[in-house]
Image (cartoon, rainbow, N blue to C red; front, side, top):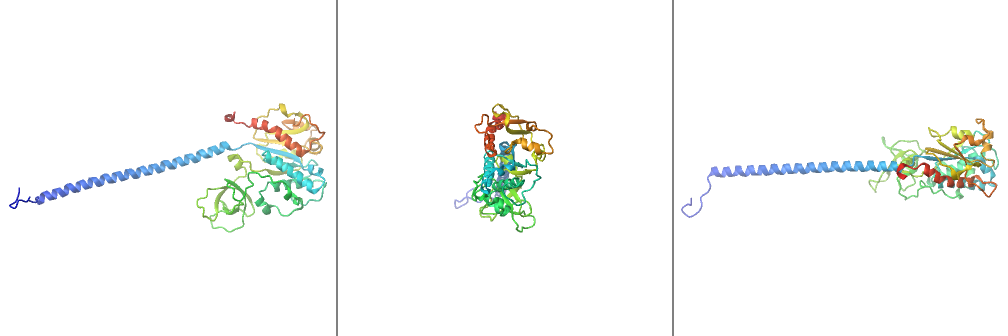
Length: 379
């Protein structure tokens, strides 16, 4: 209804109140819808985060499984007499001969070198002094010490090998250049290190020198001076003063990631001790003796195995070690092994030196070993 001056009259107060109620209800409904939509978005984000977390965990598990598949469960051990050093004419040549042994074993991924005394000496430690060429029983000690020295990464040698006459020519030997001999800036999941004598905060692990620009803090408190294998974590903060890592078994890089991680050295007082003091709980499930009187390696088929041992004789062959061993009642060394093989049939020289036999035998056995350890998926 228009008023007298032609204008439109105002709505009654009751109608205005009703309009406000309608607006309030509309606003409330819109607010409720927005809140519901916001909760849905928040729930979706939460579900997405959970899905991504589960996906990351699944990928990490898959990577671990792939690493396990990539691992190498089997080991290869080599045993040889320390007396082979007595065939060298000077201290320098003794060292060079030991270096040839170390290089051959590293090339063919030997995991353990056993130095046994075919003269029956009870030598189980590399402690002691070199008393000259030809001194009975000292060749085993010197050979073992040089093998240990060459296996140790260069940045750790000062920590574990004080100056010693046995090692006077070791610095001239060819390096092994094994995968665990890292350069300072080389990136790797694993590294060898030595525990440092440095104080740490309560609940924190020890510091380790792993041959990098930064020290590594491990997950455990260990005594200073220990050699450890460290699995490095991905660097979260490049500006951090130290890297983080966890201590793992020295067998971990081989068993999980399939890396060749050097060899261990063991001294045996006699030939029988090579078998009886085996570091593996189940022992060697494949043993091979090498001799010119053995069967030809060309026709052999090796069974599957977990821990293989290849034994070499000295100047007088394996017979010399059998004759002086008080624990053996046999005269024929072939009965001690699963296989007794001639790895170089129709040889042109009357004799094959042990350092030569090592390269020849491991080269001849390599395809047979690879065939024996094949998994079904490789077939």
